Length: 332
Length: 136
Image (cartoon, rainbow over the protein chains, first blue to last red):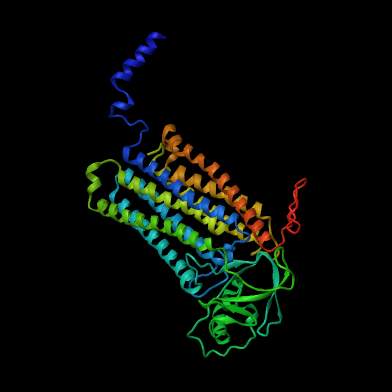
């Protein structure tokens, strides 16, 4: 026993993990610190996503993501989750090309590293382009912003009013999501009949958005109170409806659609923006390291392209965060 | 690194990416099915849909961290020092979601009081001051 201890101490004195020259976790300093940076970053993202959950739970209603994110390029609408699934696959695939670059680096194959890293950069740029398109649709076409959320969800059941102020045949139930449109000032001459007024404004009918827009412009002359809607100073058309069944309002009361929970826009733009910023900085670092690989800087180091491994860790983390952003914002 | 040959590890990550893609595809189809988009009127309870989504996302996270980020091949000390702190998040999630639900309760209570729907019960055994007669 005593000799055991002695022997152990001897060994400890001569060469311990703290004396340098040895890697306690069998990982280099740089990789270890990258792990701890990612851990702290994970807490930042978790803080944001938990805030989203807490605020969502605190509201009586929340816009249904399938209705909010249902547009595709080339004017295709009403396709829930299609576009964001495509974005997820883009990021997943760039994660795969990254891991291939790391593997080529481990066997000191410079050309392989360069090729797979170029594909990774392309994947990152493709993802950022998709996000830019998604943001543009939300901000420019649907008029969402950090402080304004035109996507609401009904908590009551009711029936929309027609142009004369009488109940129409368009009934909605609790949980139905709507989009508050904005009047467009340039489409004044459009002479649309009231035919498709009924379904024009609800988020379910993105396809008729253009018709609804021009119709809205023909029908509403700026801010004011109309038989079927209230148009606020900023031109948002809040449709009026007659309450059928409600926990807070009396049946028969005529009210107009309120804006959706304000926090939704702020949370969406901050969290996806923060993630997009990570992707952007990842792409920048990927390009820097790609140039270093291509110019042969890491060939001399002969350490299995460790820098590629480090940026790889960061890049996979960005993908990991997206798994949860995708879950929280789009799937749930 | 790892204990595999180059060919084996290429095969392994190819398998992993295909698995991740398949899970993602299944998640989306299941979410759309559960919310009644695929078959009209066919819906599943939100708890089931949400539970499956969360479980599958954790599976995806496992594969990204353990295969792509090579966590599987690190020494136990490194794995623990990175993964154990994330357990703190479990409590953060429970606490803040609980808080969120409480905010909702308070808000609807205030709304009820403002609209006069909340009928306060007079506390039992409490002396009431009559403002007309200025007597208790």
